[in-house]
Picture (spheres, rainbow, N blue to C red):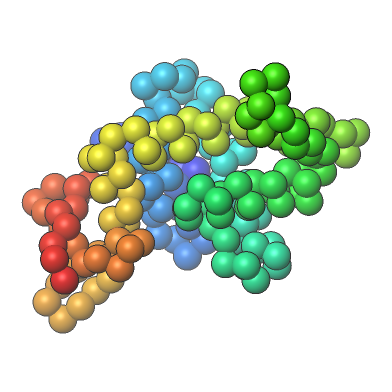
Length: 176
């Protein structure tokens, strides 16, 4: 995946997958970052997020277990733990904090090749964005386009079919 700057369009940034199609959820997230970050910081945050997504799509353990960074929280934790230990070569320590809450501490090593602070800040913003409002959640889950004889439709990750509305960025759920 790569981030493409499109300053003359409604969305200043678009994330393009390897097959040349846009990744709608990540493109929406990149443009949402402009509300809280400077335009020069968005590519830095997105570089770390896209590196994690690209790695997750090619790692043997992640693929074998069918984990996804778009999955439920347990799957996301498993992928991130694997990414931080294998790809980023960080040391992770899990223990209870002073209040008894289970916490994972991430320590950089001399072999760590990514900026851990930016990665964790970007991922926190990504998942806060995804679960912030129901409208955002609907737009993100309704992103896999499928073409049928009757025209374009899309399917949510839960298998529900939905039909595009008049607005390209929104999708109405329909009972199927």
